[in-house]
Image 1 (cartoon, helix red, strand yellow):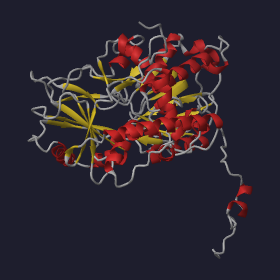
Image 2 (tube, one colour; image 1 turned 90 degrees about the horizontal axis):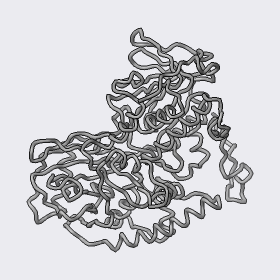
Image 3 (cartoon, one colour; image 1 turned 90 degrees about the vertical axis):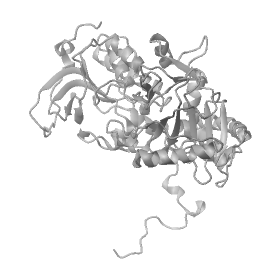
Image 4 (cartoon, one colour; image 1 turned 30 degrees about the horizontal axis):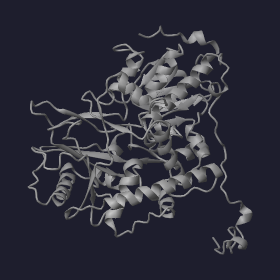
Length: 531
């Protein structure tokens, strides 16, 4: 049950006025323009978290605009294959783990709290239950897993020192090398372990990732909550918890939830925000919370009027959007060991080539389902997206037949995978923090521009890439806007001010350092060419 909708008039000075300098946008057809206090763009967990926070603060006059025909965002599932009764299984295309549950007496991950509240079925992910393979079948190179883990712990300590002492960041590859982990380019078993240790979580290589913030994000989740992750097996889908959140303040067919609404333009200013959609309609609001993925922002899917400031555009392009693709196969039998969760494969020529298979045909998951899936990331995930299903399937079958040479591996009876980079509401899976990109630059990604606020996993400095990061960011944006609307009655300065941004961010080398003292022997301003 939700409180009655509050009139815009009740907010007095917060009522929406036309934005100064507003230029009407071309429309496909004549439409209507609704007025509301807060427009929430996106019904993923960040948008729903923001709406729930506003509702708890008695701000019930909001509209949620969602591109798709369902809520949940990148917590997205599909039907796949069938059980012995002919009923389909539900598998997750996107978010699939509750990561960092919580320890007794300590803080609990809010996603785990929601999972328990709504009875979400999950199973512990035992990362120690992994078998290793190469092109000749089973090959025990688990000692490399131990060596890499030892180096990771050392690099982790070094990352903490860099953060505390404000030293220059390193790539994760450099940090791991300094800690003793130096996989040779031709040692494909070590390369497979390298992928398992870093890419499996980050969706990017160690060379493309920040040591400091990559380690920090993982540590803040595992240390703040716990290092236990649970895999979601619930046949209602992971987005059950997001629907459950929404049910606390939205009714069935609630007019405040606008599904199938494709936003095309956001016009913003110091007096309000107007959001235009492809059907010719618009929404005028005192504030808006944009929860679009980093990929959507980077691909100019939506235009902004005026253009976003340079500091915001720079921050959007400085961070990276990863591709993390799970490819599901169902067979008429389980031909792989039924007591093993993970199967790590070292391809003889290509790092990250169908490197990790995970069985769902075992106790706690979907026993007897004969389902296994393989994960690919980054460039090889994008490569799979560009291929046909048949091409990708045949490549995977070739790998499986190498891994299990003594088995007559059958053709799959069902095959499915998403193509994240072609989804116009996502353009990728989740964000990553590149080396050398500072906390201040991230704050520019996070900061509001006038009354347009931003939220999502990418804007979380502590938990970027995680579902709980999106939840926390939605709550924060909702709290801040509710505080502004309610006149900052609680006197909490952190929730009554805009998020900080930095107009100019300087590097570490002033111009005076570009001299022969530092080996810079020529003038950067001299040009011998006539033109």
